[in-house]
Length: 195
Figure 1 (tube, rainbow, N blue to C red):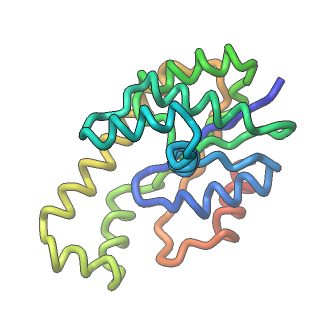
Figure 2: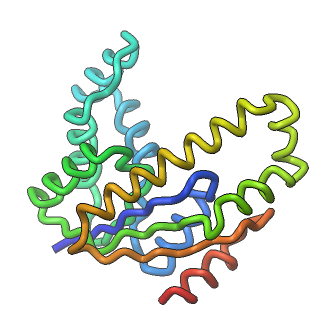
Figure 3: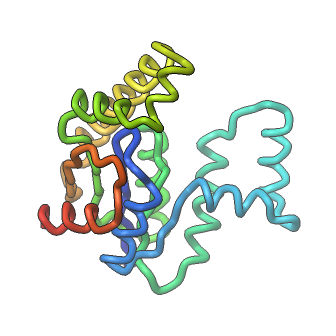
């Protein structure tokens, strides 16, 4: 049976570096949903991609039903390797759809990785003290701060909701302090410290 791990990250923690480290450390196929979705919709000879393009062109949202079809096609293309899924799901409804899809595809959720900010207030403060990030506050003032806090809270609520319905799945929670230049070695050390 193929296995899959999910990767959840708190707001503003590098997805690309974290998924690269975890997929390499555990020999997992890195399945970034955003990338897989784009690849599928740009396929010329695919009826599903034509339907999705039509929806997007008319300004409509892509329903969970279509997301499920994309996942089914793209996951079926991966052979003989366990998977790390990133950038999906974003809602409880999508998570429940995933569970059913995995059951049908005989894929077992092996674990959920959650990379969280150790101290969100300190993380936030240090993040915006960084001169490069401070430019955003200078340009957008409280608007960027409010958006950051909103996205952080929304993500936290989602994580707590998923934790509440996945008591039978192993969670690996890695706490991250703010690092101005997050690098792969730092992520590896944090993962090894959690093991």
